[in-house]
Amino acid sequence: MYYYLNYFFVFSILGHFIEGFFYSDGQSGILSGYWTPIYGLGVIVIIIVYQAIKGFIEDSKLKKFISIFLIGAVLISALEYVGGIIIETLFHMVFWDYSDMKFNIGKYTSLEMASIWGIASVILIYLIKPLLDKIIKKIPKWITWILVILLIIDSGALLFKKLVV
Image (cartoon, rainbow, N blue to C red; front, top):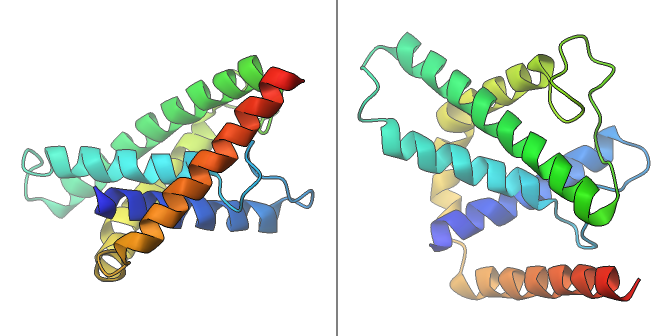
């Protein structure tokens, strides 16, 4: 459990800063803290699905590469699409809109972004995860619990603000 929570927090925080770097308004996501949970959730989905199916993928490196690419492209695009709809429906905010992309699939995903998510999934599984596993497993449980509590407070504040306003 801590393994996945730590990956969730590392990539939620990393995603927040990467997005902040590329977008000048500095707002990344609906929460106030320095995290954007959709990135952490996406990484967890890819890791869990990969671990569940890796025994079924043939030993061919090319087939593994293509499988991870397709799984990442489809699953993260679906997560992005559903996340965009939920955020707009509940909070009346639009954080991303791919309508202007040539191969958009509605407002919240596109084939161009699916390709990026597929490539990112391959990089995650083959390059980042093997290096990060050693560090992730060494994060003390008390740090994980502090982050869980802060995320709960941040989410609670968002819900309170939504109910009051």
